[in-house]
Length: 105
Image (cartoon, rainbow, N blue to C red; front, side, top):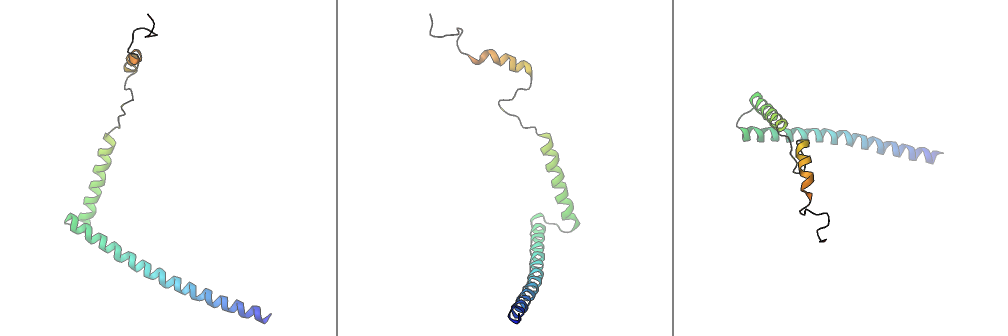
């Protein structure tokens, strides 16, 4: 029984160390993520030659323009018919021959 208690204590110690390492690694990950976000922000500021609210406004305008220009464009397929009249007209044009059997005389 004492042997099992020692193993349990050792496992508890390992678990505690892992939890502590997880906390420190999480904190370091958050710090690195903040640094990355700052670098991305600086890159955008340099690319658009503005910063702060002006940058946020510019990005918002670009998103609005992209949304409105995308909504106006309707994809057109080569094989789609706009009118039923066009479809009916095309039905008779599937054959190049007048006869049902082009080889019969």
